[in-house]
Length: 382
Image (cartoon, rainbow, N blue to C red; front, side, top):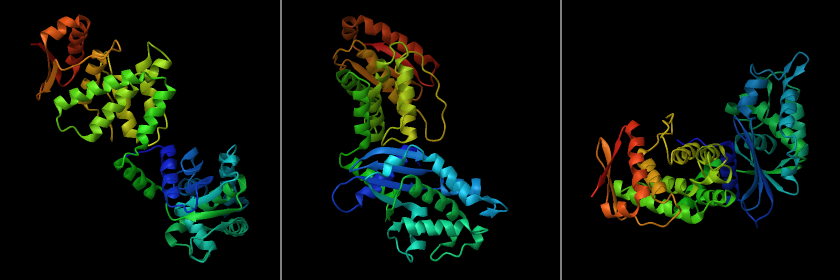
């Protein structure tokens, strides 16, 4: 199980909807009202603007319809929920401007079935206005007599409808097509793309390198050496291990554009907290851990579900950064890295060490840094 951000969820939803959309590429706005959040995405073949708002049919049901009441004496909870949703949508009116609007997932499909005789056909503004007025006039969710409303949707229907009506009103939407596809199909589409060389994560890393003015040659040399060392340690290294190590090498100098003294910490913070298209939260945390600890004292990570740092990857990255610290191409044929249950062993040709005295000193410092780790590092000149 991978945890993703709201923005990544929005991207995957858009991918699923657009993959099945018919007709030529055109401007579209995709709306998905989930249980805890609502995603709105504007784009053409790829998303251009993504928004994830903390309002969903389940969270709004708990907040406004906790006991099922829609009208309570002088308070109309449906109107309260709709006002709250409209407040969340302030400054987002442009998302549907001149765009074909497509809705997906549970709330949108439930409303479409209620309005259109059980069919997933277009939701029209005038029909939605009448439905919203009818639901707002009810006393309790149990009183809702609506055709084609599945009973399991009844407890969250009023909240979902309030959010959907707020979106229609605030974004001035007159009609919405309904897609049977959403995030599930988006995930399948994304995974299929990875298998055929269309990995969105590679595009994200490339964009970060460009925006962070990262030295591409240095990223390449560090990545190549790190992977060479990893293959010495793990001849059958998984694709996941290799990918994460390569990403960390490509982004290890991300923070340099902001600070030379704190670039590791800043780079790791950006990787961990940014909305990186294609990446899960655990992938971001793992790459950030490598970037943060690329040199110097190794900070103990706070392990949790989905985040279990791999010391093999960390050692390979640190050694590669050390060997190429002067941004120079340097073969590492003279280095042999191996491991047993208790320690890592780095064997280095004596002649190579004599040719690179500054690196020899750094290697001895590296041995000291690993003394606090479960597996120590031993250095041997041969």
